[in-house]
Length: 387
Image (cartoon, rainbow, N blue to C red; front, side, top):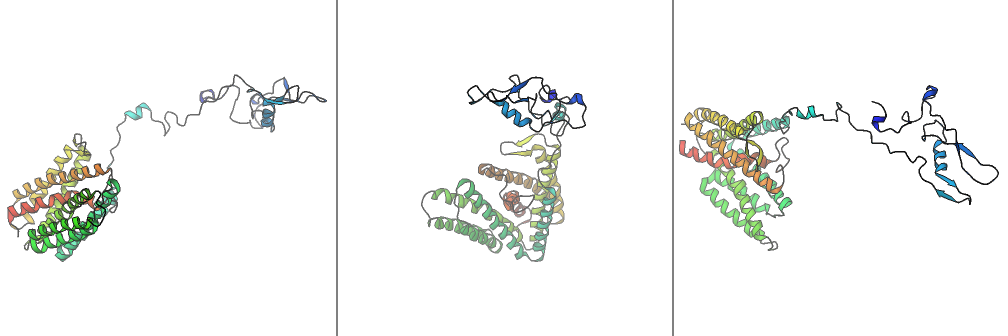
């Protein structure tokens, strides 16, 4: 490619002064005429004017160019003159990328199919998932009250993430202290006293939110307490059903394990099938990443895992019950995920937190588990009793 195609002016020949060893024919020759620099006085001083500043190889070319731009008239007063070359055109900017270079997208490249991306850090997600699984299994099968404490910690952290995002994005001031205390009480009461204890703790927590908010200004009181009651129901109350499963004397840990496995398998099946075969959007206005093919994968994976778990893990369970259980888990987990997606879209955020690398926050992992817990508990009661 020659210089004219880069926008170089005619006659420049090269970028900057030529090398000393260049051929004479490549050097820019000075013009035969000279321009007087001063009029009047003993003698007129003249200097040759180069064609292009800096192209003649003389060290004083830049100074000569400035002196030519200002020449004196007969009275000795300096006045600015126009450009020495009136036909000189500005150089066009040199292109930053050329066809075939890394920064240039040719039509052929744009037509090539883009490689799919998983959308998250799989290594971090797998590592965090394995770590959480180890903590859950150790606390679940070693000493059940320890797992109750794990549920309570997850509830408190989830409430903190939810109330923090509400305050940041919507300026909704939800009192965290009564929610955290009441949420912990709900989980413990559900494990010790059953469903009745959970309902009583829920009512007392809502009352505590109403009273606690009275200590501040009355503006937006109704908005704040409504959000507080919603948070109390959404996070700790729904989590209480996990404690109700754990309270079963015969196979409490197995029931919780089945619940967790089916939810994780449903999410994994939806992710794997949707990423590989997803073409038709499930709910594009709520969650553009979810597809109908992914939902089908969630149903198939969860139903297969449910049949195995009910047959081999749950006392008096049957494989056909596991099929129904898996179907219900996939449906409720998908709805729960879409529900939190609605919340996050309303808040204008991608994740509820950053506590878990590759996953987001605690609430980003509880979104499928929370609404699934009461569904699984109810089906356990119908199929095999409360235990």
